[in-house]
Length: 456
Image (tube, rainbow, N blue to C red):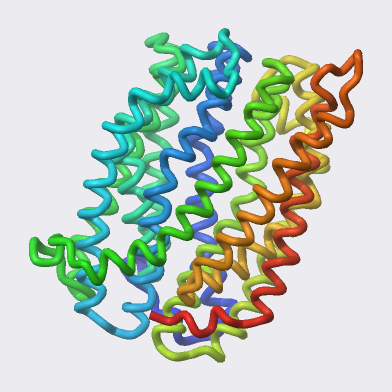
């Protein structure tokens, strides 16, 4: 029974909602654990270094996310291919997909380190990063970049494990890495006094450990696919499919990260206190988003396997049931945040003004999490079928055409002598509007149904 938990799971049989829920729960716990990386970083930094250091870590986050978009694309493409080949029982296709993804990730990691390293500080200056946190931001990003291979391989290898229906192994490895990260965070910052750089180093080491464990697991799955030099050699057909499926997913994340960076410049204009409040909101927001992201990934794997097996009837049924589960879960967590929000903010800082500001802004975002539950679940269905372009276009419309103009527009229209940069609520009101419109567009494109024709 214990060994069965760590085996790939066939989601083409059984009751759809039970399969989706059983797959989602370990992944949800894993995503919460992964969010602990950032949360523990913030708590340790806020208590042992100070609010300025907390602002530095927060300002670095959007740029780090942008650096990871290439690997998010590879992970998404590999996960879709793995789930469809697994559902179709195509051993050869599955073997080449795993091998080519491993090789492409190694090449991309090396290029990323060489190209991005000299550009980090100039980019931070371009974003009007306050002088008081510039050095700390630069240090945090440079250390994270040097260790980016660990972050990349964990995301890609765990994505392939999930494509096989194994969400439990990825969870266990992530829990191990989270424990390592927490211990190292406290040691590097509180004992060794390494500052913000110690936080980044702790995360890098933890991610490398989790990536190594995922690789070890994949190499033991010889029952389902082959792993060797023959399959590590890049093959044009598989690399092209990997890029075709993964590029829109990577572009979606790039759009979101770029929008965050553009808005970060606006955020920086409101000063260190608002930046620190935004960091706290991002940490709590990360936990609120976890059910939505988990159900979205579960729907991708579920759809991919059933599309591969030619079971469109199960895809439609599972889409309805999975979305309903996501809505119930997201609504419950949103209610808890509204009730206990102030206590959550107090975990990160003892500054009363910062707690009050963070709680106020969090309440603005609250209703948006229910909208995200719909868009993530149905986007997961479309991606699992092989339609990664539609979610990308929806993200482009809602972030570039809506969020950025609305944020800067509210800021401009509310300027006064007392508020030279406008009202700071503009950052979060614009996000709420973009989430809501994104949910409406996702429902519309799902109903149109062109995604059903995108099977590999």
